[in-house]
Image (tube, rainbow, N blue to C red; front, side):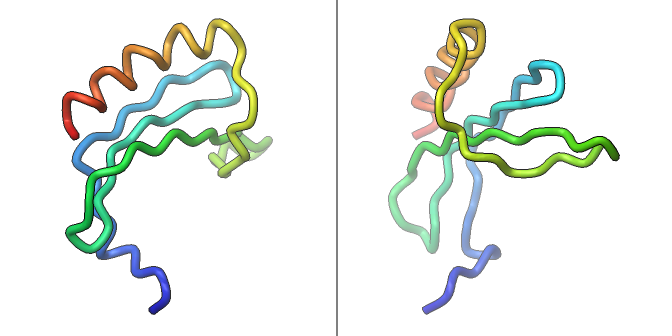
Amino acid sequence: MPYDQTLDVASFKESKEFGDTRITVGVFSYNDGPKKLQISRENQSQEGEWRFAKLGRMTKDEVKEVIPLIAKAVDNM
């Protein structure tokens, strides 16, 4: 069965911007399954559009900003 975006429900989603990049923390449940934490990065293009990028490593400043979002997300699980 292929992925169906309409079955992916977000119960929490919050982002923090860091210049031309932003990190989003979310809690998602696919097809009424268990709630799962997702952390993703998006980079802003020259045209101002946000594009998905591999999260990979995070700076200390990013980690300090994202940890409170993770704590909020856990409360929503």
